[in-house]
Amino acid sequence: MQRMISVDKLARPEDHILMPAQRMRNARAEQGLAPGNAMPYEDDFLKSRMHGICAGEFQAMEAAGRTLYDFPDAPWEFQLDMARQVWDEARHAEIYMKLLEYVGSYYGEFPEGEVLWSCTQAEDPAARVAGINRGLEGLACDVFEQLIRIAQKMGDKIIERSVDYVLADEITHVRFGSRWMRQLTEGDPERFKRAQAFQNSIDDLFNFGGGRTTIEQAGHIKQRVNEKEIEIDSGITIAREARLLAGFTEEEIDRLVKGFGKSAAY
Amino acid sequence: MPDLGERGNVMGPQPIAQVVEPPAAMFAAAEQLLGALMRGDRASVEAMTAGQAREHMDQIANEIQPGKYDKFELIGRGRVAKHYFLKARLSGSGAAPFTIQFRLGEDDGKWTVREALNLTNRRSGWTK
Image (cartoon, rainbow over all chains, first blue to last red):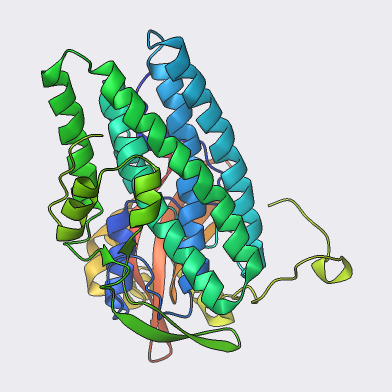
């Protein structure tokens, strides 16, 4: 079996539409929408956000599986952590498929992007976990925390509790990344730097031009979600508390907030 | 997605919103486009294609021999707000299937192709 597979090798049902994120951005821009993801003030926000997360959970499951396969010489406990993560992500994918149905959508309603998979392309296990477990799973903490607050304002316990359940696992996954990035590079500062640089590139990629901010500093916007009008963040926020629980330092989080996209590994 | 039955008949959380049904006019436009491609009706194809997609659509039209295909099937669909990405397979007796992916968007009641991609012998529109 081939190692380090490219994005077009991932198995998907034939009826799914798969494409580079840039094509989706173009489609949004042509419709006069912000070019990134669906924003909280859009009608499709919940559906689109959950669809993106669901696709992300599938890719996270595949990424952890590939990490397990690609590095057969990694320590046994590393492999065990990756195997556990595959199982976690599989459950998350199922949870989000059910949440999609709950919000009136289904997996495949929207195209699936490739940007997350591009973050897996590191040939060193230390860099791989730095990028996936610290970069991407850290981003997941931000996105999930925000979704939980939106669900609380909606008074929707189904979304609030389901996403909180998933967030607990993501915190564990970031901890895997923090532990193995440190342990695998012990006594090898150059290798550590390379892993760090890979994580930085991912933090930069998802920094949205410095558009992420703290929960306290976030702008707010009124949005009608079904029968209720609620006030929600106008952009992506950084989940300080969840990231601290996951092993990020205050300094790393401050740097993310400032948009430097650079984080010293825990 | 497996058939989970009629949710309204079961206990537990019910969906809080409806699935968005694509407009019939979008399907009609797709049918019109694919029919024109199969017939080799370049004028109709061009009339339905926005300037930005002309080059790619021309390449696709060049690869489809008129009359070679007589059936099409929409095999995939994904929407971005009100634009629809569609994946279609053309087939005909003795001809290898031809797969294209295109995006339809509507302006002033007219659906046009905004981008097009030949997906034949490719698994997806993803980069490598």
